[in-house]
Image (cartoon, rainbow, N blue to C red):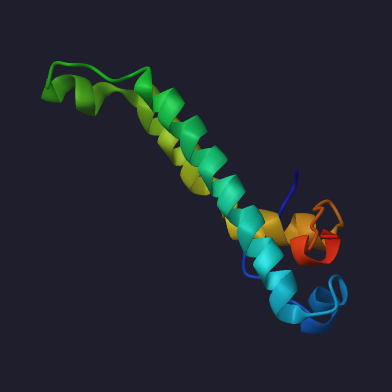
Length: 103
């Protein structure tokens, strides 16, 4: 997914028209951003756990270039809120109001 990581001005009317309410739209985006953030954090922790050692050796900490590259990769990735907003605006997020689906 190619997402521009820089700051983008958004048309609030376009965001609001997806659900009929700006605040509801932003709530949907924030919930999706939490999911993305959680997934990214889990992936990063899994990758970094491979480098975990029980020995506190300063030389190993400073020499582990793979671990540094993995961390830098995740730092350069677009923020979860940016990804969630792109998905929302592209219609890739399904949301429903549980109060409206109750019988």
